[in-house]
Amino acid sequence: MRLNAACLVDGGYYLQSDGLVYFMDATSGRMTPVCGKPECHHSDDTCNAWINSPFLSWYDGKLYYATSSLNTDNLLTLYSMNQDGTQHEKVQTIQLQGADWSTSYQPMLVGGWIYFMDSNSMLYRAKLGADVSQADLLFQENSSDILESTWKFWADGDNVYAMNHVLTSNGEYEDILYRLGEKETDTKEIWRSSDIGILGVDESFSSWYITGGHLYYYFSGSDVWDMDLQTNVSAKLVDLPDTLQSGTAIFNDTNIFILDDQPDPTFGPQSPFRYGGKIIRVYTYQGELSQELDLQPIYQQYPDVVHCALVFADTEHAYVLAYCGMDISIATRFYRVSLESGDCTELDTWPGAANIYEATPSEPPMQIG
Image (tube, rainbow, N blue to C red; front, side):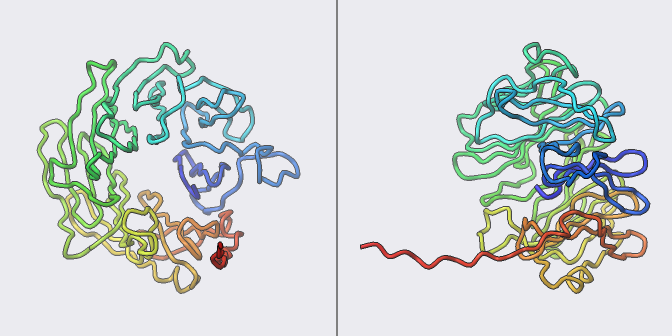
């Protein structure tokens, strides 16, 4: 919600926060709304940077996003825009009917194809700009034993994948990976987290990344695994239980980053809310700990910071969002942490830094009768 998408382009990143798109210069770290309207306040849907989208993608010189409204019968619709925020144009509808409430996902645009999901966990792909009624059905989930599904698409070379994070009717969480074909009969299930003995009884925090035909998988409080998706051989890459009791991870093509944050006990172990996070451990894909990045300076600079969250990383920096007052607070600080020096530098043009968290006092209970 506060930073749900980041696209790497020449010279920097496009970032989405609270419905608006910003460009962050890679050298200076300065962020500016993608809007050139005179006297625009960059605060609502009149701004050129306003997209309010579940995803953001960069393809063939344009930004793409998806949103729904009464103008599109509340169906998710793909739009394109120029890199300066001008010429927002409808590309195509990417939903045949309303998606089920218990399913969440983000579409994916790769190689001129848009991958998306319809109701009852039906996965499709369509050519960019094509009539969605001609989309290819790639998979339909048997949801009879599933209470919740959270899907994520992924591309690695010529292979396209979909990971389903499911809550089964017996209260267990599991990740299931599919390799998507060009039609339904070509799509195959290729891996489950239960294959390596991982089934979550509480809301699990798993992170994963696919590159070079390998799936790298981290389950909070467990270990980092390496699965060869061609041979189906699994191996433990990093042994963590004695070092890290809980955490969240992000990956890039060169490193694995694991932050020592914890489930917030106020909301219970099944809540996505987290707290803390003061050390980022950086591992290589040979399983070696290469360095530890200390986030204590962030907490010292702003004593009201309750949670530091990893958002993305490149070859020079890890990017961290610090929440003030409570997790998912409107008041946030954005930092990049140097992999060379370990310095934490606040990016002071981040829009969330202008917000102030104000705790709402609880109301006294009402007596009836």
